[in-house]
Image (cartoon, rainbow, N blue to C red; front, side):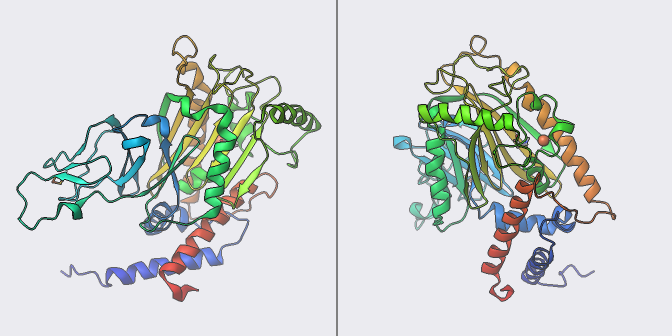
Length: 427
Ligand code: 3BY
Ligand code: FES
Ligand code: FE
């Protein structure tokens, strides 16, 4: 039996890169993607290498690691990551991989430690990643300084932590501009003074791109999300073809009020990857709750008036968010496999809000728990149809699904750009 693969691994890599580039170059713009990009495990692995290991990702919130020694872990494709707060409030990010023989170092999802101690042979790292202790058993020429945890890049703004697994710092002025504006738009919500009131993790049996596509349009909302549609408007822009004169009047009233209080609201794009806008909720509602009324009596920041609409924050490839006057709902997706995606939702409130007095987390989360389950069914049915021999790419609506077109274009552009860096011959 011949156990040697017929092609060396790098040839297989080259072949799959060429296949991906051909699929993306030949796709019909404005149409959903060719089937293999939603189903093939080698193309999924390439998404993980070229997008998830190279682009900025939303990881979590500052408030989840509030003090020195607090850490949180997450898994980016095959890569365990740990974020830990060190001296002077600095957030360090590392590959959560021991430099001895590679064990994961931090196992819990969140916790607090004095040092990072590997559970296997107790190699011990400082919060800044330096190796401090290796048991006095290593060879005489062992150089502790050469075995620190491998760093990843971390940036935080407005209480949102972003990570990038690339080794070389990425100089990206558009992303920097987004981070600056993210602080500005979130200023009224006091993101230095929030806590997580509730958290959910659901696994959707669908490719990560289907999860994002589904989120980027509200064409499906009226048919699927009765709870959400009590408060959410399917559009967030007076130029949208669905915008009504009533919405325009609501925007005029709300933006005058927001201008007077110095709350940023204008729709802004930073390339296709990031988008910010504050938009009113449905008339008479101020929060994404079943009755549209605030779920938390203690408002965010120093707000006195709950009428903040919803600040919508988009970060491709893995996050969208709604920040209201009383609470925020944030979303992070992390792919688990070609047909499997983890969706983590968090509900944030003022850190001084008292559970059971100011808010009931069970009530607060009802709308988005229901919406998440509805979206899970939608994306899973979407995946099952795409798996069929009958699937062929179908047309997106320019007026209702422009957000999906933007995502697919962003994805294609980033993939092709990274593939060309790897294989200049593709140019
Ligand atoms: O609300 C969201 O997060 C997205 C955007 C609009 C439709 N969808 C439910
Ligand atoms: Fe971490 Fe051995 S693998 S101490
Ligand atoms: Fe939905």
